[in-house]
Length: 355
Ligand code: COI
Image 1: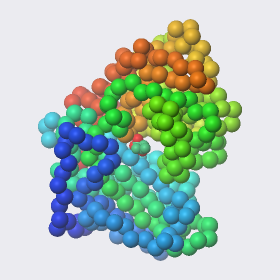
Image 2 (image 1 turned 45 degrees about the vertical axis):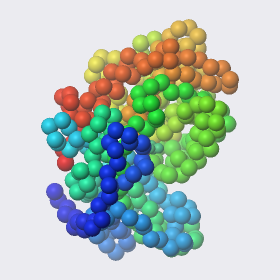
Image 3 (image 1 turned 90 degrees about the vertical axis):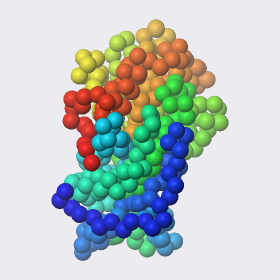
Image 4 (image 1 turned 180 degrees about the vertical axis):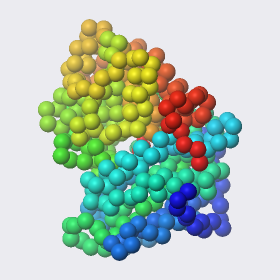
């Protein structure tokens, strides 16, 4: 390691949750990583401290103008006892893409990965081992100037917290019901759709809530201009298998460049499955379904991994996909990705990083 971080251990370790009944993101480990930024020192004073409240003045910039960013990745314990991270360097790379968009200072990517490794090492007893569980890692940066004018903050804090998690959607790998959103939009070109910022998620809650009230799990986002091109599903990237070809939306500024998305594309290519990044409309999807060519729909993300879609509803028109069953490709991708992540199958891509 190039960087070393002092560790202050908690004197009051918490009781660990039941590994067989884990929800997503409800309990947090004993420690957190914390680092500061100011104009003179850059990023400095990286350290591991007991997990606990952050004390900030009410005037702190992040509370008012949401100058912040976050990342998400997972740590796994392999059967032979190793601790594995999945492509953490991609999170560090994406963090800096987000930082650049949000006027947050760049963070050294090696330092970020080393900080992730260190906090996971310190709290390694928090990595759950049951099938479908993992230790979710949430790095985030907040603007900490106490100032109500709108300008880039001069000071920031970077944290990493850890949460032992189960499935993101209750029911695990089971088909979801998705409502095509035609009232609210998630992103437009020139906005922050490609960046991992809280504001994107805050603005999406209303649509998600309305969908849940109607009996759906999530929304499918259409483009913000013409409201016809398919963009994402909830907080995940969206894939469609049409007539043997798998299509997903291209990264044109409104789509989050998901690390699971990238891994899925690479795996499909490796298997010789045709996968194309191109724009397509929700009408194309309904047409494909009408002609019997829509075989599978699934969403990909760090939290949810692979989430098959069993039903779509667009303007009251409901279609059932693959008899509301988990598709062959969804299952194969889920098994391959989680198998590589947990060290159960050979990682031919060099994706896993040992702590
Ligand atoms: C993730 O999939 O890691 C995310 O950041 C989405 C979040 C809503 C849990």
